[in-house]
Image (cartoon, rainbow, N blue to C red):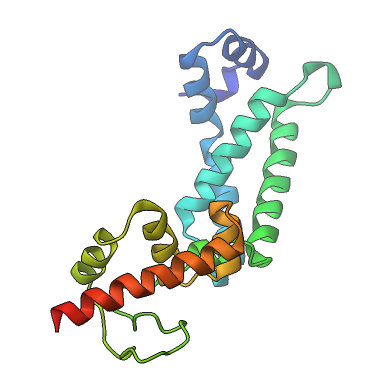
Length: 192
């Protein structure tokens, strides 16, 4: 399709009138720019561990923002406005990745890693490796509140981070971890 013949202003007007076809047309028209920018930022920031598709997604978010915030009265071409928005969006995205703000969420811990390594090594054999099925069995022994804290702690979150994520006092996190430890220890003793 020849996109040069498509007037952005008419398409934007139709989008504001809730036309899905117009929105699809705009996405189709600007997708090459999104891919080009995504490719550029991906190549420049390979060390961050973010996949190319994530950059595409961020580019589409920027396009959506540009579509809904563009103001014809500002006397700027939509193309120019979109280029400005996507550049700012990618730079902000890269800055937040480099700030390690999401490191905890982006890292995962395999269930086969050593169990409860971070707990205060009391008479429990922490060198045992827990397979995924055993982890699920352990989680099923706990009520929902304990299970949430247990899973987050097992996946490497600190007590402070768990407190913030679950919006509970840090004292409650310590209490729930202690109770979880007692329950699991008692169940392991019964099993042996």
